[in-house]
Length: 253
Image 1 (spheres, rainbow, N blue to C red):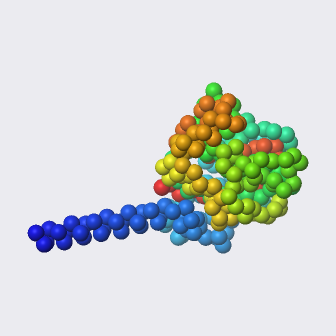
Image 2: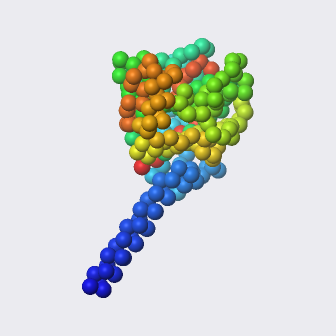
Image 3: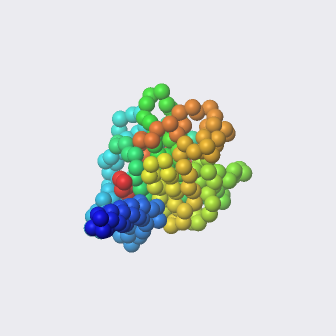
């Protein structure tokens, strides 16, 4: 009986330790710390590769990306100084680029730099379908904007780092136009965390009562499929202003 009790206690201890280890490994800030901030641009270090990080942009070509609801890359997108950027003026969200692959649970990192008054976004859980004109009709958006120089008054859910039209950032660790910022998104089941420059700015539980209330009011009231998909493409938004993206990396969980 004593031996059996000891075995049960040992099993419970191992289970608890394993569970704690798994939680720690998928903790957003722990995942963020896996990235080498001093690594050469658009490269993976050996340690990052061993931790299953993948490079989504090598600084040289558009491999792994295409225009939303189209083949190939829109002419307005170019590679400049080893970064993805756009040349259009005026709003052009129908010319967003998206990943070829779809993803479900993952951590995503991307550096971005804005010109003065520029606006863009990183959109995720996107459904690509001709019945949708824009990625934002289905996918939540990590807001990328120079709100300090935006010509109009902005709501708190439009500030850089916000989950656009849903959750305002609870901190504002952004760097001004002309400097590189790091966006980091973790999707683990229904739990979504957004990090800006190493600081958690948004946390929410998808399908919670709070999330449903926000989705069904305001901007998304007229978009019934917003947030509908748990697996989807990732998009870099073309809002018609100059923004650069580089060091785009992903780790599937």
